[in-house]
Image 1 (tube, rainbow, N blue to C red):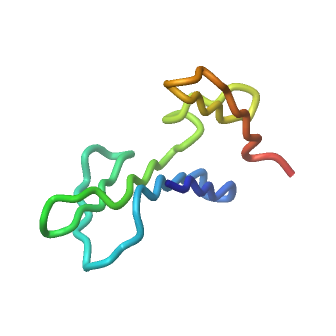
Image 2: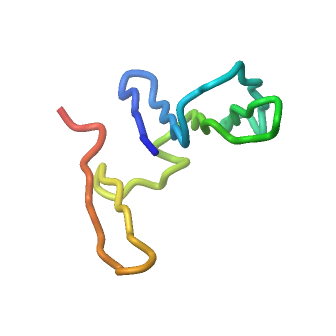
Length: 79
């Protein structure tokens, strides 16, 4: 999985897996798009207005390993 962020446009993309086929984009709301394959696999999620969608705290993303509880903090949107 990979998360990319475009600071200029405030858009985040969560890539769940590499595209191996043509995907269809489904608009879930005015701020969320879902890319899926013809067989229903999710390839990615696009978040418009990403800072609000992700509710970033101090321009950071916090990833938590659900098994170990270990947290990894990644700064975003900083110079």
